[in-house]
Amino acid sequence: MASNASCAWSNTLTDATPQIHGPHPELLAALQQIFAPEQLATDPAERWAYGYDNSRQHRQPGLVVRPDDETQVAALLRLCQQHKVPLVARGSGTGTTGASVPATDGVVLSLERMNKILEVDPENRLLRAQTGVTNQALQQAASAHGFFWPPDPTSAAVCTLGGNLACNAAGPRAVKYGTPRDNTLGLRAVTASGEVIRCGVRTTKGVVGYDLTRLLIGSEGTLAVITEATLKLTPKPEAVRTLRALYTDVRGAAEAVSRIMAQPVTPCALEFMDAQAIAMIRDYSNADLPADAGALLMIEVDGPSAGLDAAVAQVAAAAHGPGCMEVMVAHDASQVQALWETRKALSPALRTVAPKKINEDVVVPVSQIPALVDGLGTLSRRHGITIVNFGHAGNGNLHVNLLVDPHDPRQMAEADACLAEVFELVLRLGGTLSGEHGIGLVKRPYVAQELDPDSLTLMHGIKRLFDPNGILNPGKTLP
Image (cartoon, rainbow, N blue to C red; front, side, top):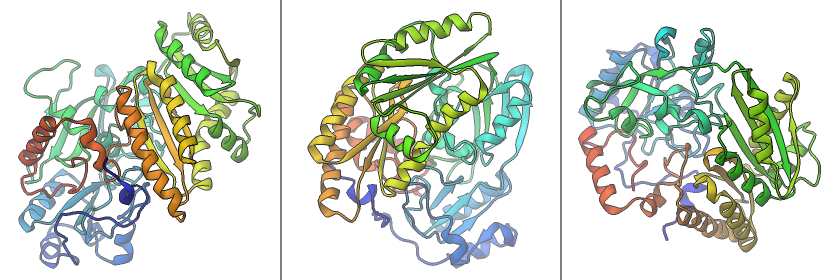
């Protein structure tokens, strides 16, 4: 069994990629002919801030470059190719797997200045934007015309469109509306050799050539740097209802998820929290939650006002069952806000309790959620490690958090073994190792357990076609 102990909780990165030392003077001299001084970061203190993400891993980049447009991105990549200097593209660093952490001290390409909404076309239900724009900013632009873009990660206020696309990050609404792959019509990107490519369409149908759009989405910047995206917009629903269902135990809630997803009304959000998550929320927020609640579901149903009450009643009926304590419908905006604040309080609470927690976002078929939560409970008891589970239960995507003390060697050894068994359990249940956090550095050692050798060989061949010298985000994604 492969182990990712050195990746999952260590800040020291190791990789077989040759190391590039110093600020690359020849490359820097060439870049200074193209970029203004404020677009280049050479001071070690300034570069330091671009070497981390939310995985808490870090490596000091050799140079940081902040292009203004696609032409400058292409010029940068041509120079990196010429000087054989590795490059990693970066948004705002909210990822949790080290995907935007430099695996060498090469160049970090920050997209922070490429943050423009280029076009909103309500008649054709699309929006075009540079990939440095935040998810929140593009939602505001779409909302002004009565639309939204379905992907809505918890970090939407600060995470960038490029990061969403790089990891196919979706959030709660994916259960009904899909992921970035389902809601992106086309892309513009720059290859490792500095060539600008355009893929996809501006229409809802299109089958000319291979689907490079879906290939690049989720590739974590290892194939090309995405500079612009044409997004498929969805009309904002006329009405939304939010429900909270409490259960005596996690199995009752997990079985309710299966019942809810088996009936005709698809909720637009279906979030799960176990007893440990509820306890932490109770301690770190003002949430009104009974002490004996063993699990919680947050459910949203949207659609036309006419008939929505009947749809909510149907979902509520499915939520009732063995172990259900109550199903409550929020009746005003303040109650809805309180429910979502309850959900959003969870991650900060976990960081407070266990700053070095191991966070995995596994996915299983919805019908296997009861088996998954039962299995995770067994692993928690066997290894003596607290495991907190929450996430997007409507599509089987649970965030499994191992609360560990990195200064306790015994616990760290148990955590390594426990994590390996978590992944074994997920794959045995027909699941996948990552739903939206990506692979990055942290999960890279486990990829070969899910993908067969022939598929991996084909993927490595695709990588070589896009990036023959291996300069794009080396040491990530593929084993």
